Structures are given as C-alpha cells and as structure tokens.
Image (cartoon, rainbow, N blue to C red; front, side, top):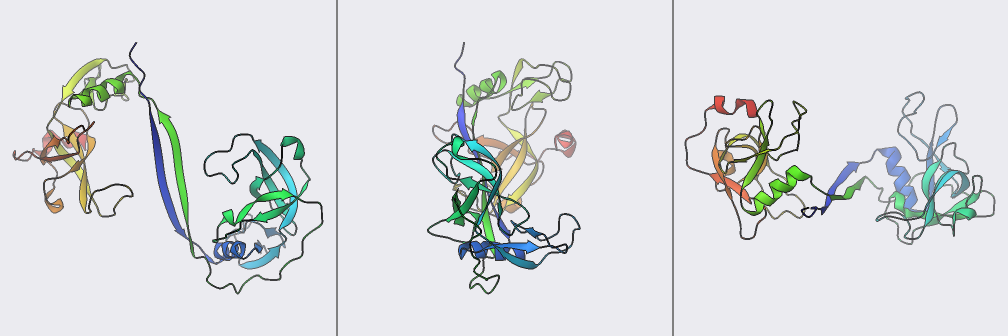
Length: 313
C-alpha cells in the first residue's frame, strides 16, 4: 500500500470592520475598564450591546454602565485550550450575566478544575494588563465572593474612541488527499497533469475527484491533459496578498488545459496584465524544484475560438 499523503493547511482571512457608535463605545469602555451595555425601550440592558433591539428591531443608542461583577448562568469545561484562546491552561467557558445586565456575556473563567465551577457562582472581570479596545481587554473572569462592584459613572467622553477592529478568522487542519488526488499530485512531481475520465459523460476532471459530480459514478481512467491550455475567463488582482511575493496588478485566470473537461486556476505571466484576454493560449512555467507550475505564459499561438471553450467558462 502506498504512503498516505497529508499536509498541514491554514485558511486565514483577517476581516476588518468599522464600528458604529454603540460598538465603538463598548470597546472603548473596555479599554478604560468600564463595561457598557445598551438600554432598550422596555428597560432591558443588553450586554454585549447591539445596535438594534433583537425583539422590536428599534435602533438602540442609550448606553448604560454595568458592574464588572456578575453571575454564571451556564458553563462548559475546556480541558485542552487551543491556539488563540483566552487562557493556556484548562478553563471554563461561561455565560455571565453582569450585575445590572439582562443578558449574558460569553468569556473564559479561570478555575482550578470543573469541580470549582457551578451555575450561580459569583465572578468578576480580570482585566488585561495592556488594553487596546477589544473584547480581549477582559483577560478572563475569576471567582468572586461579593456583591455588585461600584460603578464608575462613565458612559461617554472617552478620548480617542475605537472606530474599527480586525477579526482574525483562521482554520488550521490537516488535509489528506484520496486516491485520485494522490495520483494527481504524484503526476505534478513529474511535471505531468493527470485527470480522470467519467465512464458515463466522458468528461475529464482536473484535478480528479474520484467520482463524477454530475453522474455520481466513480472515475478510474487516468488521462494526461495539457500541458497547454486556453484562458476561459480571468480577473485582475490589485490588492497584494499577505505573504505572497507577487507584485500587483497581476492576472489570475481559469485555464482549460487541452483535453480537460473543466478549467483550473492559474496565474498568468509573461504578458502585460491589460493584454490578457479570453481565448489566450498559454503554457505552464515551472521553477526549479517546484511541485506545481509557477504561472502560465502565452504560447504565441492564435487565440482559441470562443466555441471551443464556451462550455468551460
């Protein structure tokens, strides 16, 4: 049996968003060790605050301070913290209704073990030593044996309000290709592109998937395609990607390799970006020790007729 292939993969997208007046006040308050909620028309105080009443959809703007102490309403023990979580030692995820609030805030509770956590226990905020205007300004909650902490009386007037945040969305996982893609990857090592033909519709899938998504039948017949192909459609990239050493603007295209039944992705080089066009004939360019083509460049052939690739757009 051949070795099972696997590789660590990371999908990461730092999302930047601007803040309205309510969220701005909440995060700015955390930076100043003040917890703000927002009051609804029927007198409820929502923490974390939202910009619209979830019941009536009314716009909300009446800020109200709540205490940094509260009560656990429910919890779950996290025995193995992961990267980026609030604590590096085992802790409890808790929903805490802060004194003065009518809704609960999700955060971490620093406790020695699950036997030390219970619904109804009193807790208080442990503030981060350095605060920047983010929910992580609350380092965690900690057990507390007392009543509501005094309020500061501050709901506005903070200097240098927080106007935006960056949320780092990231997924780490290990990918293991199946039989079909393992053969495809092995072919690339020899600078060959292998697809698989559906025995029913006869379409050649590149990269192969092990089954035809249209007919639902297994595919096993290997077919070598390319190496040349045709640009079917493309986009011009004007924003430089993090950790990608390619100068903008550049062109990323769908390329239908000769003999393939659908197009794959590839970068177009060797031609000014504003001269790339549908129907352009291209060929792969490999760099030394590369495991896949670095980019595709024009072959110098006449452009392909639209009818020859219109089904591959």
